[in-house]
Structure formats: structure tokens, C-alpha cells
Amino acid sequence: MNATAPDKILHSHNKTNALLGSIIAVAIPFLFWDPLGLLRFRLTPLLWDLGHLLLFFVVGWLTLNCLHRYLNTNFILLFIGFNAVVFLIGLSIEEMQLALGRDYSFDDIYRNCLGISLALIFHPRTQLTNQRRRVTIRALSILPLLAVLLPITKNSIDLIAASLSFPVLSNFESAFERERWIGDDLEIIELDGGNRVLAHRFDTTRYSSLSLKNFPGNWVGYRCLRYRIFNPAADSLPLTIRINDRIHDETGFAYDNRFNFRFEVASGWNDYVVDLNEVSNAPRARSMDMAEIAEVMFFTMSLDASATLYFDDIELDGQSIPCGVGANPQEPN
Image (cartoon, rainbow, N blue to C red; front, side, top):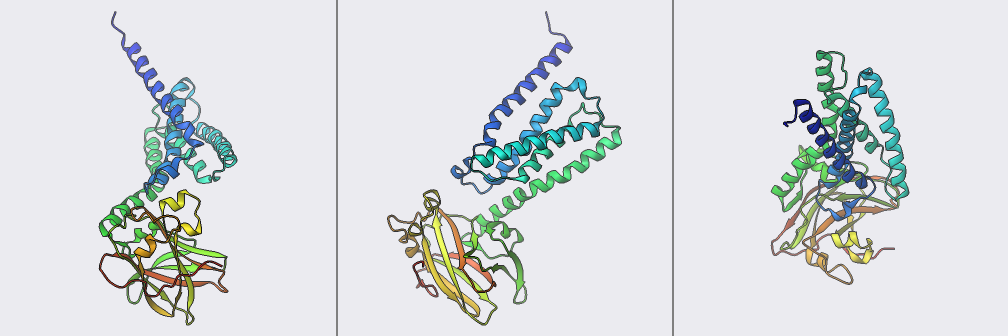
């Protein structure tokens, strides 16, 4: 006997629920296990964070499928109730992650609530009051989703730009280059009649740092790293440049497993060149993996007063030229 139309609909409905349930079962362990250390792609952390939104969207959709007989509740009450439950679940998840040695993140809780909210807003069986209000609410809900997607969009654009501009690592001609750098107090500004530079304020903490993290890391075949720094103060400022590869980050961050140069930044513009052969030979017990450079860091140590420096034109050079100008190695205190 052929299946009736209602039977076919029920079968399709059950298959959809089974698929959603399988996705949830696979995804839940990843709330407590973080493989980011094993994944080196620049967008991985951002996509990983987006997983919270997607997971709770699926959870919400499946829950609404299962509770379709009870969805005549006022939409606002349903919205508040679902978000309250998800907020408490999110708090519990973050507490468990904290116990496992991971960071506590209110951003993750926000993404959880946004995911469940989008499921409520777009599920066809929730009782939005009328067609016009339904369309308006759905249109407005896109705005917080776009805000969540903005960092991924900016990093994706700059990922392409960084590949196209290599061996220039950063010259700050694009506003999206800000995504390549990590620091507490930095911004891209115009200096010297329109030249765009990165301004960073180094404070008086023991180590105040600025890091270039997102860039093409295969430096094989290049001889030198060049960069420029402008010091607006009358007095020189001691600064250290640190370069390390992936192995350094994955084996304990030891001082003797990376490259360090300490030098003075004189008043005005200063041009520096670092010999990449010295970088390659810097680790004590091995050679630096020049195909997997992971970070270029500039840092100060216990300054007497905060100071701002301006960085520009950080690039690799393959020419056969003298290197090491303006930088002198120094062991740590």
C-alpha cells in the first residue's frame, strides 16, 4: 500500500529531526574540547566561535519541531523563556569550561542566545502576530547576525590582501590590516601628510607588547626583515623584537627557543634590518622553521613612563644586502 501524504510528511519530519539530533550530538563535545592548537588556519578561532550560534540555532529548531503542538504561546513569552533557559545553560557551560582550564566567555553566551533567537524568529510554526510584524522582526534580526559575521568578513578580506601583498607583511594601507595585530592600545593613523602607520602605546607594565600574528609564515628564501619605527619623543626608547615559529609556541615558549634582539629607538624615524640567517640560527638546540614563522613581537620592559611608537613598512627582502643594522642582541636580565 502506498504511503499517504500525511505519512510522507511525518516521515520527512522524523528524518529532519534525526539529522538535527545527530548534528547536535556530534557538536556538543566540542563545547568542552578545544582543538585550536592543532588548527593553524587564521579564521579557525572565528569560525569556532560562530559554532556556538549554529549549534544553538539547530538546538532551537529541533526543540520547536518537537514542541510544535505547544507553540500557540505568546511569541514574546516564548522568546523570553527560551533565552532565559539558554542563558542559564550558557553560564553552566562556561563554568565547566573554566574548570577545564579554558577561558570564561560572555561572548559565547551571547552567541548561544542569538542562535536560539534566530531559530524562534525564523521557525515557521512560531506565532508571530501578523505578516508585517513577522517580516519586520526577521529583517531586524539580520543586524546582530551581520555584527557577529563582521570579524570573519574583515579577516577574510585581509587574509586575501596579505597573501597578495606578501612579502610585505604590513604597511597599513588597508584599514583591515588592524586584524593582523594584537595589542592593548593600538590604531592605524595618518602621519607625515597622509602616510598610514600603526600607533601603539607601550605602558609601564613589566612586559608591554605589540604582536604581528596573522601573516604568511613561509619565509624560506628571504634574507632580511625590514621595518621602520618613528619615535616622537626626544629621548630614545629601548625595544625588543622577538620572532618565533610554530614549534616554539607548541613546546613551551622557552626563551632560548626563539629569536630576540634588543635595540634603541632614537628620536624621529628609524630604519631597521634583521638578518634572517640569525633568526634561523637563534634557537639553541635546533634551527628555526623558516617555513612556519608564527609571530613577530615588539615589546618593552618596565618603562618609567608610557610611550607611543609608530610602525610602518614591515616587509621581507630577498636581496643580497648587509643585515643587522640598528639592532643589537642582548640576553634577558
